[in-house]
Image 1 (cartoon, rainbow, N blue to C red):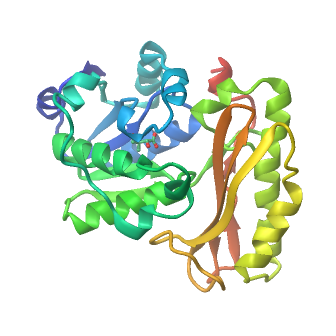
Image 2 (image 1 turned 60 degrees about the horizontal axis):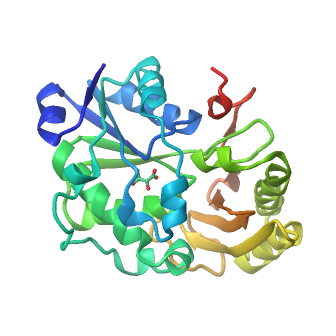
Amino acid sequence: MKIVHAFDDVRSVSDGRVGLVPTMGFLHEGHLSLIEAAKSQNETVVVSVFVNPLQFNEDSDLDEYPRDLDRDALLCETAGADVVFAPDVSHMYPSKQRATVTVGCVAEGMEGAHRPGHFAGVATVVAKLLAGVRPDNAYFGRKDAQQLAVVTTMARDLAFPTRISGLTTVRESDGLALASRNVRLDPDLRGSALKLSEALFDAADAFEAGHRAAESLVHIAMDRLVVGRDLQVDYVEVARAEDAGPIATIDTESFLALAARVGGVRLIDNVHLDPDTGIADRGNRLSGPSILYGGS
Ligand code: PAF
């Protein structure tokens, strides 16, 4: 496996069909599942590791974002990646970034409303990665359901030839969605954080029992979220999977998403709702502790 820091080097070591897994590093099993999917469909798997300053709207969140390139490189190699692309900020943004990508209403609700500029930062860096790496396929987690809609819309509307795939959420054994930020939760906060997935699973049960009114699912989820000292809910909403637009009655693929601050850590999670099958995708659970906590 090669570690490279410039777009030219990624392209010169890539062969055949190329699958890109964009990440901000501090990898967990959710990322590994994307690498495995990429490995099964491409000759070259590139994992980008870049903490993108453009998508952070709080300096403290950017400063505290966990980073460990040696650890990430080892995990990528074990998972079968061929190339780790770890550019410096000065390579991705050699001068002030004047051209940015915005994706209209897909980026306006939920995360977009609570994190102004966040999705312009995501869409811009992903557009640069697609332009620079030129992958055939790119893989994203469904845990960031609105991000997936933003990236899919951006790639389609700007005619990038890359096929975008979204893969199911991977959860810790107790249900907490895997996120690199989980390492910042102490045991007390972790207990509060668990309420997020529990709230979604309550609503998922109701969906599978036949509830289709978005408002009723939101209420069911809200009932579980005790807004206390440690848990501050930003939103609980149902949106269409395709464009993250609002929906009142779930008659097309949708997701129930929520965001909350748990202590100083902001977490998001969702369940995917398919009215055709009547199934709520809650993601896959690990059977033991996550590699986030030093396990292997
Ligand atoms: O989901 C992430 O880790 C980031 O938003 C992404 C897609 C790598 C862009 O920086």
